[in-house]
Length: 386
Image (cartoon, rainbow, N blue to C red):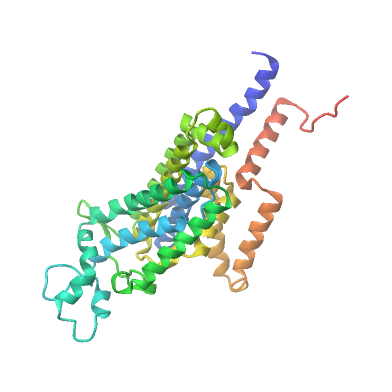
């Protein structure tokens, strides 16, 4: 091996070691946190932030690796949340129809027309969609399957027509707004603006997962670690490398014989499945589902998280989501910055875009490269040509 090859291989090896070291440290901290914290309230809150970290991974996968700016990721998160919430709602003690052994959401009784409280036919007209959700496994399965189906149909329609760039962002943004309006307008079935509350607990094998139990935290934390490692493996495969080439130069990739649309559809769909899974876990930890999950601001916030952490890094986008939400919660509860916390978050985003376009992950890579140069005794500044 020549000196040039050896010198170029050393930084790459150092970067890989540092990369996996960060992954290992992150997983150790996430899984070991309950041993250091006995406040169940904060443990539950951190579990929600870990769910947001999963959304950061989904954004990094579609935007950073596939080059697809999806401004409607809240659609898939919301679908996963509602599918889970519908199942857990029927497990609640408040969702039992009087005079029948079929569970019916309590809000359907409240929203029934006067004189129809005892008319089971009137109730059943709006509750037939809820019938399969009497089985918890169905709701949990649909929390992932439905976002996958919607994403596959949407992405197939978009990428087979070679729609790209800002047009994809506009289409996804319009779709999430449309679905949000449909959920709000279908108040007799979805409870409209109020969302789904008073949910039962997730029950697996007869064990109930109280949102404030350590076991529930480990369900969320373990799921995040698993998704992070699987996503990291996926982008390191041949398919992931081809995807990045299609992101950088789709025309050349097509010339080399690759089906660019197929790779885009696959990774867009996987990203949606991760978002749906995150929505399911959020409902388990937060005990509610709301149309606010499909607000424009929420979907755009996901993009901000990924940009701050580094959209080209899965672990960076994940940490960015957790960090931004932690800062947001802390600052918003401080009396001095109670009304200005959104301005602070916006300022952080502007500074990152201006001075750290590759996010915190890019800054960490630069620091690692600089340390590698210092370790080899090389001059970190490039020499001028003679």
